Image (cartoon, rainbow, N blue to C red; front, side):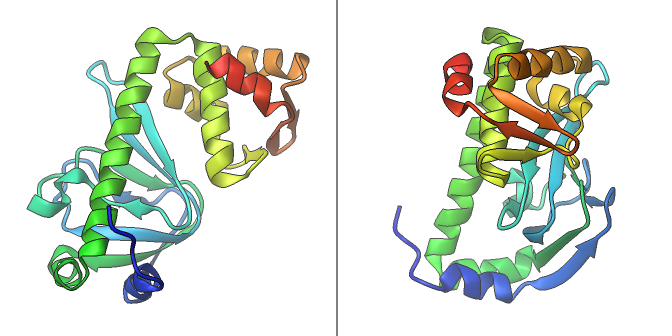
Length: 210
């Protein structure tokens, strides 16, 4: 994939319409026509869907710089998931019509967006496979490393992420998450404080994750 020349992505994001969402607001809704793309400027959001048996499944978390868009964006089809603001969120928004103009002018943006959507689908597929093939402690260790790497380095702030949501994210019950976190803490792999999980031994977590 060709490299984007310096400044082109920041030039694109600066041109987007500013939008603000309060904590709990829906940014993209399941079943509605997806003819807009958002880029998060600040805050966190989560993407969910509902399983056949009615359970809410948490598919992904998003932070500053992340693109919020459905694979159905380019044919303006209905959204297959719902994205909700976990904190107050500021985004830049662009319509599909205006996005097409940028894609014609800057093929690098096209490649970046397609790569982002493809990577997201690949990660979600791997998570579904993990639910079948990997035990809960390994899934939780993998999730902690992934989320801390994206949002906090060695620290995962749990003020914005409940244990129930962690369970939805890895396909486990809340009590399983609670018990496994306690076991990780007892082994010295993590330290749990009021509003954060500190990854004190990422190497051991990585070994647990496989």
